[in-house]
Length: 287
Ligand SMILES: [Zn+2]
Image 1 (cartoon, rainbow, N blue to C red):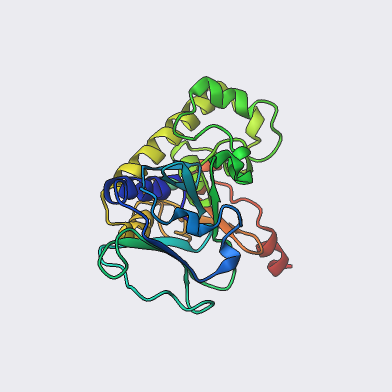
Image 2 (image 1 turned 90 degrees about the horizontal axis):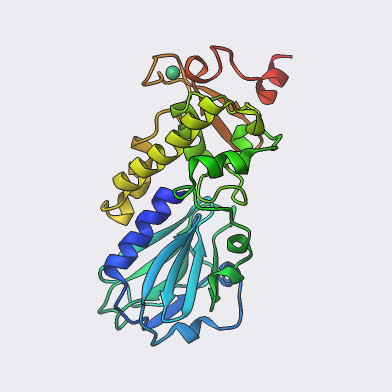
């Protein structure tokens, strides 16, 4: 799933390549992706792209006051093309959900919003104010702008596990499953630590890691072609999705805790005093 660094890189790419161009046509091949009906997507036709930005993990293309907001969810992606195919996509076929022509169709650039797999989560809204998107209205402060004091205030009194708190978009916006694993590994904190009970020194490490992990990932991602971003994300990860591989810091094997539809990874030596965390699925198998 694209998180803050990847979405920031896509926004950067759109600022460099889309701003100043005109939306010539929007082709919708998956109506279920569109979460708003008025204004219609045809209202985007003829509008100049005046900006591109990010709200947490939402991408925001500003078309002269009318915003195309996109949440890529788990398997959604934006594919930029310098010369976008002219033919409107066939409804309901393949991963293509939405095509935006930023030049005369067949002669100009543009992008496709695609989604792989059967679990559909890709969502797009056309709104005059991004805050009309429910997921944006509820967002906490952006992870890259949170100060050390603010982070302490946000976590204060929270009883959930640190893993849960860091991925809660209403608490801090932009961090998902992959980068929360990386941040906690860098900060040498257990995913199961109680979020509101971190001592001051642990909060220092957490804040430093939040900033450094995300800043490094943004720097790596920005400037890469948007198509290469996913691979780049994987190559920069130290524990996430690396179950069974050696921790690059201490050499211990990276462990995993799995749930029905997702898993997270951590290093016992770096993060949990050498103790493996309880894994419900694993303990059920061992019984
Ligand atoms: Zn380690």
